[in-house]
Image (cartoon, rainbow, N blue to C red; front, side, top):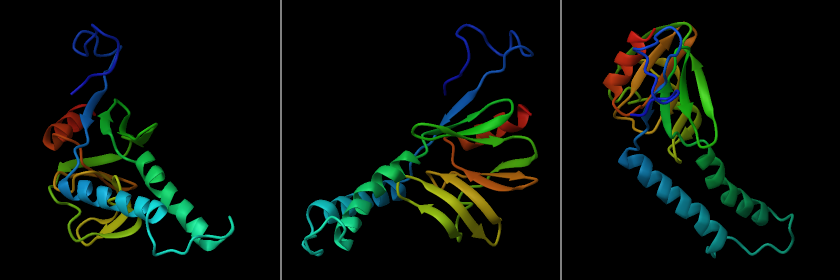
Length: 183
């Protein structure tokens, strides 16, 4: 775990002036690794080495557009990969490759470590395992929710007054304790 903020200043010395950010990694489960590798190989196989598609004669042919799509798909999905999570005084950050998605803590009603919370979920829109499991999902137990997950076995369920979010930080029990004690 790393802590943000200026070196040499801890939250215990100046609790009201400087509040530190606590970071958590985003471990990948085996299924996410396997799906990501196979999907990447499939996309590159289609682009560079498949005899299944006819060679395009013009730049505007459907086959050419399909190849470009298969080349761009891994790159776009990789952009949205989840690198980690952070708890700040006013938000939970989902660190992506080049940016962070902010989940404001305002309206947070509860946070709980619920292993396998996504079990029996239906993806309504999003990515089901190409470098991350993100998007909108629905399940009987959670209802409609947003997911930012890399390990479906270690899930944390956040219930806000405006909806439910599922995350998968490393050390999920400590994540929940830190989140609820820093409110």
